[in-house]
Length: 396
Image 1 (cartoon, rainbow, N blue to C red):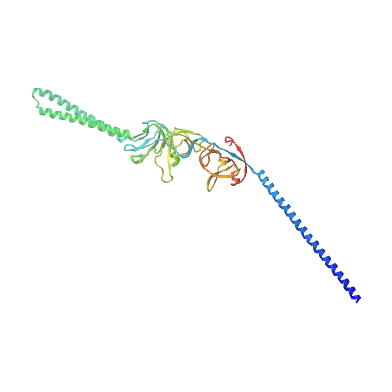
Image 2 (image 1 turned 135 degrees about the vertical axis):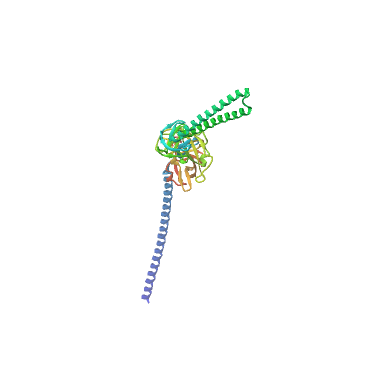
């Protein structure tokens, strides 16, 4: 009995110790878990603080690293309008010269293309051997008619003396008077025929209708010509030239006669001053263009049929002026980048106008007070923050 009691007592103590040890272990585990949770919170807070600080620093860095962009405020400028056009050179008044008479075989051509001629100067001579004989015959006919007229007048004078003595009747006098008048008329007819033949002979010589420069010669000695041969010579009256500039409807409406222009022939650097003397009253239905004719003085470089370019004054306008580097173009048209009050890049559509040596006029889209990005606009995007660096318009 005592042995069993002792055993149970020992077992009870052992069980009690085990329960106590298990309780202590669970308590420690709870504290460890709580510590780990607290440590995790502390770490999370530290990481969040670092991220927030890093973000703020990055924002500050971005602000400090904003691209420095040159901007310009163009203001308003008075611009001399110019229109650039192309066209061909021609004689201002071209005179085609051909056969005025019956024609014949050409025996000589004393002038050539490029020669200066005066009004009435002989350009080509046509053979007139047959016509000369006709003139000689006509002159002989005049002599015959004049002799008949002289005889008729003498007969009438004698008859008048005999009438007073009663030997000749009044009827005889009238008949002699009629004979005399008919003879005088035949003299006039013969003279008229002779003058006609002389005039025909004179027309056989092809002469210049006015002074000027021979542009073209299309006849040679020995050639048979007639009224149907067309123009044998072409003459620029007075040597005056012109440029026939082709302009759009819009540009044509901006100019008028008397406006000055500068013409440069292709292949030459020499400039020639002229004035518009005629503006086409019609527009070509095919290309919607008209012609402005620019009068020019003679110069060897101005060759009819050649190509040339013209710069025509078209008044003045007041508008902002930008250098070409500030204007960008894409599928939507022309535009510029401006910097707003928050230093943000903003796209602005513009309409360009006159192009001059000082820049391009902006006729719509700007009032001149904006800060326009001067260069490197192609590397910017709308909404981007930049650091604007203004310069004067005169420096741009």
